[in-house]
Image (cartoon, rainbow, N blue to C red):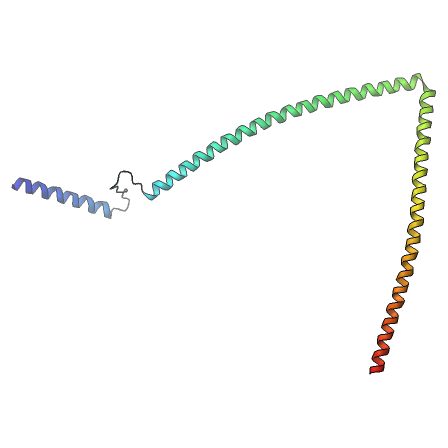
Length: 171
C-alpha cells in the first residue's frame, strides 16, 4: 500500500510541477481540454489562410482573363494593320486610276470640275443670301430692343424723379 501511495504522490507532484511550469512559462502552448477547441490565434490564422487562398484563386482568374484580353488585342491589332495596308494599296490604285483618267480625257474632267465649281458657287450664293436676310432681321430686332430699353430707362428715370419729388414734398 505504501508503494501505491508513493506512486500517487509522485504522479501528483509531477502533474503539479508540469502545470506550474506550463502556467508560468511565457511561451506556453495552448492547453486544449476539448479536442475540437482551437485557440483564438489559430482561428485567425485559418481565416487568413482561407482568405489568401481565395485571393490567389481570384488572381489566377484575373491573370487568365488578362492573358485572353491581350491575345484578343494582338489579333485586333494585326487585323487593323492588315486593313491599313489594304487601305494604302487601294488609295494608291485609286490615285493611279485618277491620274490615268485625267491623262486620257482632259476635256471631260475639266467640264466636270467647272460644273462642280459652279454648283458650289451657287450653293455659297444661297448661303450668303440667307445670312444677309438673317442679318437684316437681327438688325431690326436690335433696333426694337434699343427702343424698348430707352423707354425703360426713361420710365425708370421718371420713377426715380417721382420718388425724389415725394421725398421732397414729405420732407
